[in-house]
Length: 143
Image 1 (cartoon, rainbow, N blue to C red):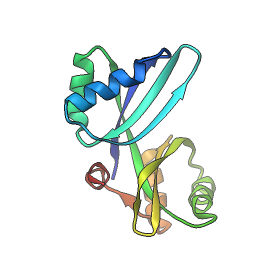
Image 2 (tube, rainbow, N blue to C red):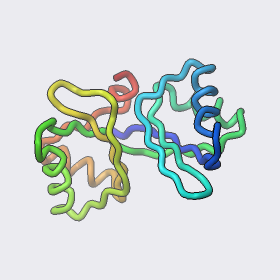
Image 3 (cartoon, helix red, strand yellow):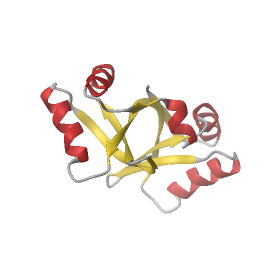
Image 4 (cartoon, rainbow, N blue to C red):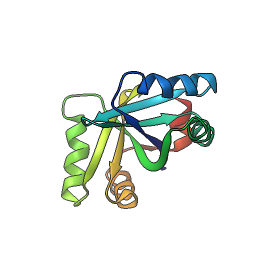
């Protein structure tokens, strides 16, 4: 139920982001979701792609510093309070959200959100027992 995410450290300068997307485009790798956070000196680009192993290799081969992290993709009810219902359950169970970002695809009547937790295994257990759908990596890579 875990999804592999790659993180790329970029200098905060023109062309940094397009360099990553060029490498992925040339390798035929599709970006499924992304998040970009920045500071004054560098940015962290977090990506869900359709081929993690190949993406990491081609990015490394082109001089990018790439890490791999596990996150989870959760179906969130697409209605007012849908996200709150998940966050409330996590809070009641002492689970901290380190970061999250929206996925570009809908799954039925639900939106999909990518979460990174301090305790990912416990978060999966709590979400499943709370009746939420946690997507498998293969499902996410192919959306």
